[in-house]
Length: 519
Image 1: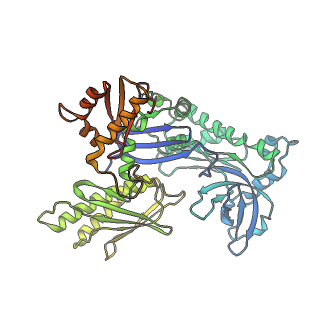
Image 2: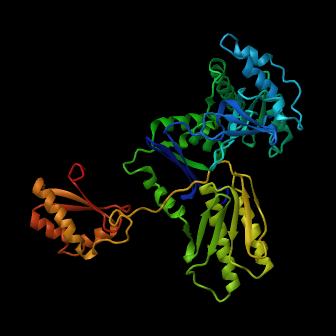
């Protein structure tokens, strides 16, 4: 089990098509996410000016158009306490009105009654300001709330609210009073806030700076509300990088490595606001090797996202994801058996629990998870495994619940499902057999490579070429004093430099010239 003092590194790989983020604890991949750079995606925290499309009185809910192909859903109870204030602001805002004066002049009034009806507040075609709380999953659209909030590292800003709440985890009464008085003194009219646990001990400058940046972000969206009155995104919460920094960042972070200057500056700026003394841990990676290769992230992704996940000493998990639930089967595999079968089973199950807790975070698996542990005879071991699983899940930010083992050895885990499970296809179609399962005889591969080399040199006489192959084929063509590469050099008067690429399949091979051009 990872301790709280585990070394944490955040590795950010920015490419033209996507941003990939890996959270490493003691150089082991714990969380992984990716964000497409191709157009807008519908993410948790995004705020839209939507339009009511259809009322569902039987469900006391409505469908809202936010520009997605799937209709988003909002329930009456998600309209929020002061929906009437938001509604008045949206309806009265236009290009001829001073939005700031309008905002501060709106009276919050009474809160919405719990037993109210959605048709009393919404009508088809009505513009409505909404925020995504659950991303579109499978055939379902986004789940929405009309109670907008802007989350910072230390403070959550609540437009059209009047209460300042403080995290129960802050125990000191003096500190609670200090924070409450400070935030109340700088909050403008019609704003509320939630003071998060991270704010404990923070100086005034940090809290004031963060609060002002959140207010500025909220008020910058008013222009779109006043001029467009059409379905549009008002603002996104943050980029994935800063969202992860906001939710995870603490004193145990050792390094944040970024391979893109723009994202590097963005992360550095954000850290300087929330924790100025840690700004130096943000580092721009400028190595020649791809950043995910350098930190061995790709290797861990390939080993962790398959259907079969290997563990220590031959044990393994089999993970199946369906529409309704996720199923995980624990297998002891070829693990050597001790004389005490029960102790051996308990040990394998504990190992499996550690990997399962990691896999839930890594794949962001949500909904119902059923784990089929190996059967254990003693109640002591069953209780011990249940308690151990609870301990392992404590570091998971998503809301979850772990139930004791049933008499059939099954454990049920529910985990907050706010976005689709991360799935990565770790299998590839073989470029040699194209999925048929049949390839040319491996004993003839040297002849095939030599034929390629001969054809290349017949067209373009070269003194040196690079042959890129997988590790197994590389060892085969270079072994011994009288290797194939030595024979080719003597025969064709051309040096053949062999470069091994671990991503190449067994018999895959490619030739390159001295400038790196493919031949």
